[in-house]
Length: 534
Image 1 (cartoon, rainbow, N blue to C red):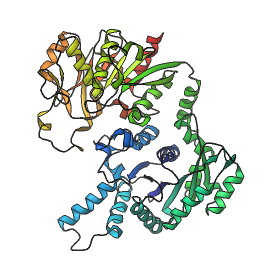
Image 2: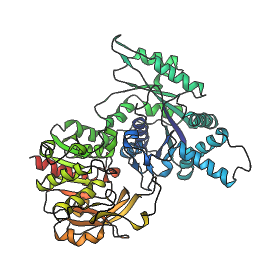
Image 3: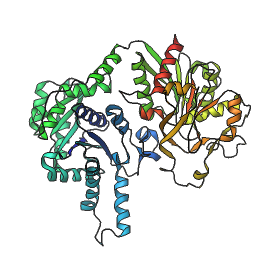
């Protein structure tokens, strides 16, 4: 059996250059050549996971099938490659240190002094190799979060240095840097990239391949200059220009030979360049979709990355319906009875976004009342579904004080409540219903027609649930509980069949939508929104 090869992706100059997109693109291109790959992310922050982080800090929190709360880059990995990531694909400094400290407390180190080198670096190396050894992947791509020079990422870089040294031809480093354009001088500058590579070399790592992020096309003279100043082969310097869509990056990387450079560096056969057929036809459809469908995102985080997976799922669903999805953020904190008509004007469909806590929920309820009474296609996700349930209780069932126990401990009509087993939990992190759970769909429902199967599995991230005591009352008045967990009988999906499209899911369908397998709920929602527009 061939040995697993390791690709390390690091970043320099500034953060947010798109290491996740480059890692995903490398994965996609190697997959297209028939290799079995996986991608993992190492985040240098000390949180155990991003579960307790505010979305303004790190964007959305992505959830894997096995219930790990992770960085949003894992969403890119899954959307690009169609692989399923797990707990082993996401690590933080916090988890590494916790593992080492737990071992020390158990006495595993036999009285040794615990140090960053070798104990922390060994734990990092163990986790890098874990996936390859366990599942015999051809390639393990490891993305290191943060920027070269950050004090936090030093142990990760030391671990990579050691691994590159130990593995020889079985490991390469792809370094992503930035070439800024100085408008006043009318020049592109390579100096920040040179410094970034120098910084990496000072840690004992010579990058094998450089990917240059740039807003303007780089000519051959600049690429040659970077190659010679940074000790990198000229055909191992590729540029990553700004493109209309992130999904064009793999094609752009392939045309510049990024995958061939990696294979050559790893002494592997290069063979023919794969055609990326289905991927290219997706891009073609995307380019040809000129008509627009306008979807409102009603939420409280005015930040692109806060609802990343939802945005991507809607955008993919637009492409497959031959439309361009235009997303409009509607701040739920600013919504009230007086302005809701004006704020939701011109929307073909509305998504009530997930979230936690009190802030902005009354605005969500106001939006739902408006879309329900005006029959605008509405999709409630997680907290969005819970707000649909509360709005219905207040305005249809007549319980003016209906609420979730999360928002109002004292409510007499706790239509959303906490499960018994959750009541004594004092810790915030990792204590919710997390990961994939089964759901059985009711025959004759709208959702069973959408999924075209009775049993589904979807990923969760929440602590509060629909209160089953109220089911009969809801169903009598027209809101049907059409998806239930077969084991716990918890309500997973509600719908109002009398309306064009009014569905709420307790789970997060956006986590399962990929470029080549868009999620059926998003496809059908966007399709209905288009019909609604016409």
